[in-house]
Image 1 (cartoon, rainbow, N blue to C red):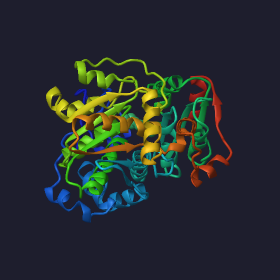
Image 2: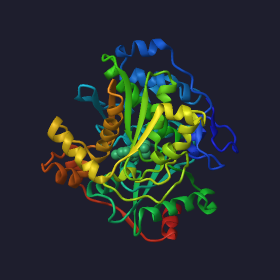
Image 3: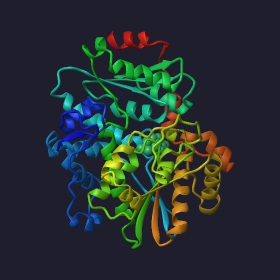
Amino acid sequence: MDFYSLNQQAPKVSFKEALINGIAPDRGLYFPEQIKPLPASFFDTIESLSKFEIAFTAIRQFVREDIDDISLKEILMDVLDFDFPLISITENSATLELFHGPTLAFKDVGARFMARCLGYFSQENTQEITVLVATSGDTGGAVANGFLGVEGVKVVILYPSGKVSDIQEKQLTTLGKNISALEVEGTFDDCQTMVKRAFLDAEITNTKQLTSANSINVARWLPQLFYFLFAFKAAKSQKKDLVFSIPSGNFGNICAGMVAQQLGMPVKHFIAATNVNDVIPRFMQTGKYEPKPSKATISNAMDVGDPSNFIRIRQIYTNDTKKLSANLSSYSFSDAQTREAMQELYTHYGYIADPHGAVGYLGLKKYQEQHPDTYGIFLETAHPVKFLETVEATIKEKIDIPEKILKQMNKKKKSIKIATYDEMKQFLLQ
Ligand SMILES: *Cc1c(COP(=O)(O)O)cnc(C)c1O
């Protein structure tokens, strides 16, 4: 399978090259040249398949020229060694919990898949690869954990000092080994600017093989399609049309769900639920794409003003607005509405949602008001303890902190404080 650049000005590449390049030389996102539907029998008999068999069958066409079947199976066994439970909420809705991985973030699957693939490719590479990533919180933890101990790969994470939560900071700074955390005196945007500059700095790129690990990387993006297949399997016994509501920021997760649909999975509709960063809900109404600076919200992993994966979604529906609208609705919700939803889920259904999951719930509820004859699944993308203060203040209850988080909270933070680009460069070149 080849991947091409959506800007159409760069050569086609294999999965391996797309992974290592991250973004194409013409700054376009990579997209698979073809998405071949799976046989109907796969969906008819999916109840009898394990999550490993489902994942293997679904991703194989995209990677098979670069990863042999046995190694792919090993990678998936390792990446997917936790649960993805579907929890019933009402008669016609449920939530798919994606937070049972090592950092309690749904990004664990993508980060771990990318890390294992890169580890596999680095066996043939003599040059060490440096993964350079800026984080505002969750991405960094998932990437750090995913790449921990992967041979031939060094990870350098930049995060804004004092602007990530305690849990998030510990997840970045306590691992050691091949993971280094640079604590930047500045904002997330400053971190990101430094990372972008490093990729264009020949003094660095001539001596170091740099790659990024954000959601535009195909190896982080594609494995997210597994979630939708797992949910389909779990919800199959009920006979209504299936709809998914996805709390969305960069629109990578929802776009992976649409790839599952292209593989032949029966889905009636997708709902992209956002916070007040509403570029896509507006686009769906007006047909105009107008990026904006992001606004801070309580669902901060979705504070995105220019969602990078939306271009892939348009590609999936061949840039046909009618087709897109037939498959996608998008709604935006305020923090006040999000808090109300968290309260409602807790008091009516005994379910503790984090702010992102609550936005997903709101999107589903709004859609089902007009389409009651559907079965809806909203994705719960983070464990509520990751947003402890907001959740406890909203539901007015203490929540239990999982063992693996408590352990990490007691470890000693190790970071390197930097303030300028040159300090980062010195660190990379040393
Ligand atoms: C990253 C993230 C999202 C948004 O996912 P996208 O693929 O960027 O749309 C939602 N919730 C949580 C908790 C996240 O970390």
